[in-house]
Amino acid sequence: MSGVWVFNNGVLRLNPGDCPGSNAHRKVLVHVPSNEVITSYSVLEGKLSSLGWERYYDDPDLLQFHKRSTVHLISLPRDFNKFKSMHMYDIVVKNRNEFEVRDMQ
Image 1 (cartoon, one colour):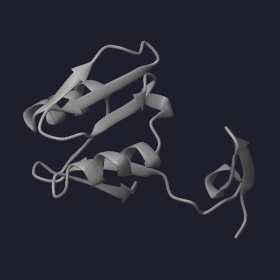
Image 2 (tube, rainbow, N blue to C red; image 1 turned 180 degrees about the vertical axis):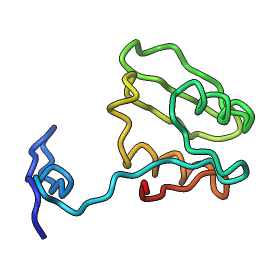
Image 3 (cartoon, rainbow, N blue to C red; image 1 turned 90 degrees about the vertical axis):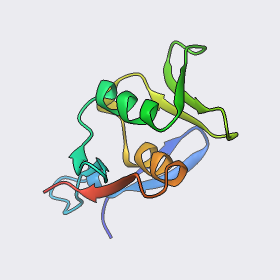
Image 4 (spheres, rainbow, N blue to C red; image 1 turned 90 degrees about the horizontal axis):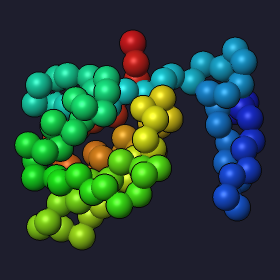
């Protein structure tokens, strides 16, 4: 497997998509009931709101959502261009059957 090793916040990981010529696929977050690809935070916020998530405004560097009936907190980078697959999977795990992460076609 090829890629670029990245050391960030004390964690070393392989980013296969960072390697020129890599076959890694970009991921997209899909709202399953509507089959809609999430293309912005405003779209995502609307979907999360309808599921009972409330926006937190405590940290100016993050978009955060909390669901009162759980201890879950979703924290996302403020810039949608920094919205990565790890953030997508966090949303999927906390909202079973509502979202999926798919390879972008």
